[in-house]
Length: 458
Ligand SMILES: [Zn+2]
Image 1 (cartoon, rainbow, N blue to C red):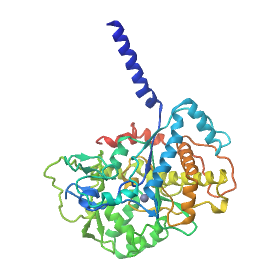
Image 2: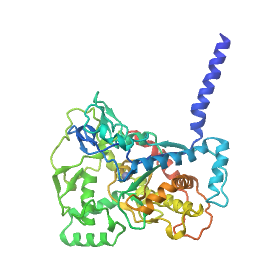
Image 3: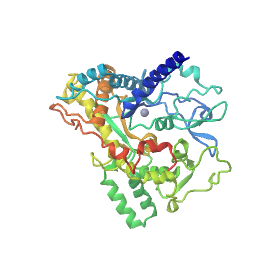
Image 4: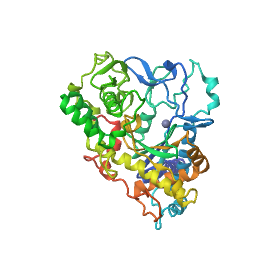
């Protein structure tokens, strides 16, 4: 009996060491988030995304991402993310950390051996290869997009709520989420671009405009056209950048698109309240709440926005402001800094490996500003990057030929954002700064860890 107890104790200690010994020493959790993965299948009632519980239907088609010939955004982003994870996973063992230091020394004159593991998670499994498209199309009895939806959705057979990618990423309480995408159409020389959602204070400008007199409106519009937001993403040419900014502010505040002049909601264009499509501390209600009094209660009024809702308390909070406003790039907060810094590491990696000369390095473009889902509803710092433009031959060649350099530079960039890194001098523009994020201010926010507060009711 004594012997059996001894064996059980030894086994328990061993399991404790395997499960807990590793995790307890990882101070930081990073999610590598390759975009897309699923397919834009019909019917949307089965295969869509943005499930609105009030109306019991999907409000949007699944976004499968960009493609060019037989190159697909979701596949390429996944391969780069997986390769970057394999490099960062070197930090899990002491011999791996020595290997990781050798990689750091390609970018730095004096990098130390990392002292602790980094906990790295992929946001999704490998997506479908595209030849599946025809066999999957028009099917109603299987939910192929279940592993890849951004937002929560009902299980096709049981109707139980299933967490989408945003809820699953938040449940890991990561410090940093690195979202990797490719765009379709870009500049002729190829480039990379950050994708950013500003904070509450910028959307408040649109709300002020809508509620202002005509003289003040002219001033607000003039200021916008001189601001860093002047190239706000235009989803189509039917509206100006300023009109899209107003429309996106309506979506952010109410879930409705606006009329073209941005002054009123368009009653036929409800896109849903995305904060209620996520399982977290900031939704107004759970799916289980019956007799929901908000159900289609008429058109919203921006004058009487209820800022007492937990989501709006989060939006006006200091940490969201740090993430999305001001900061080291002047605008865009820690999110834009992280995205730009990783892209600067990619340029440095391509140059330091002699892959491309200075004048062939991909430029870093101005941010794509909009109400993007991941930067708005992820409770971590989010570096969201378009790695290239698939219509562009230079970008396709760069990503196919130097995939591993991209993955390495992303891994080194992530390390630098967490711990800081002294950078070797090189004669190129847009060098990384090597400055770490100030993560401690989030981790010690009002006596608790802001990144962990996401799953708890405030
Ligand atoms: Zn994408």
